[in-house]
Length: 271
Image (cartoon, rainbow, N blue to C red; front, side, top):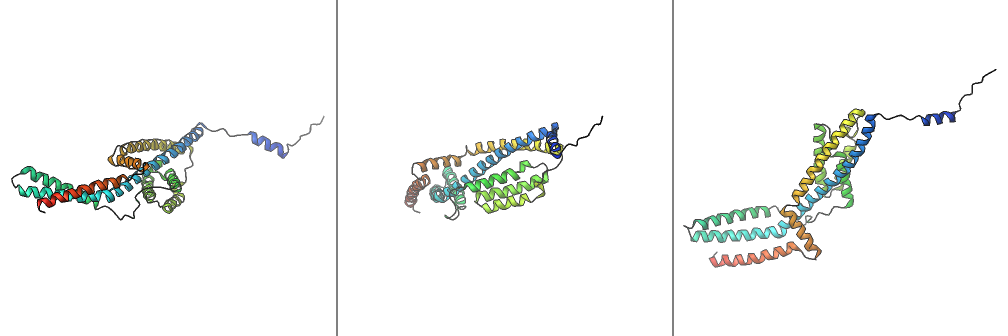
């Protein structure tokens, strides 16, 4: 009795190969899980950084507008009030309280003048209104180069420098600079991940911890900003704008009336 060997054709071999699947190690499974978790955190971090950068830029723009419209008028009013206080102090050489009031008024006038001196030309942007393209670019930069995604001090330092450039470019609406930062980073050695599963897992876990810490810091900073006087002014300006009113212009008008009254009192003193 003869037994014949029948070779398996190529199709059968392919089917057998397809059934052979490599089983992931526990470390690889954990790495996959942590990488997915990190990706979620990276997106959240990018959104939070965008919110913080936008808020800072909006407040800076509002502060410049306030100084140009209201601050310069306050400086003029404080200067007149200082002259009045000094004139009254000169008329009463022995009145210590009058001299104290004069010194206080002069100090306030100097502070107002210094603040008003930072005002730039009216052509500068008075409102920060980033485009959706600009926001998307900033998110991409934050996801890729955020300093809290670094695992060593040298890399963190480089990322911090680039992130500062990105923040400045975002505030100035410079899309081309943001694109250039992304290109520079994409061609850098830091953009290439390591090979070891264990090393990548440790790196990923540390990155998650760093991102969580940064998210807490951003939340705290935003909460602090929202308690500031400047943010309160921002809220009031926006509410007035919804009603068709220009709050800063209204404030400027009120100060101009006070300036007229102060000039009248100064004239009555004889100055």
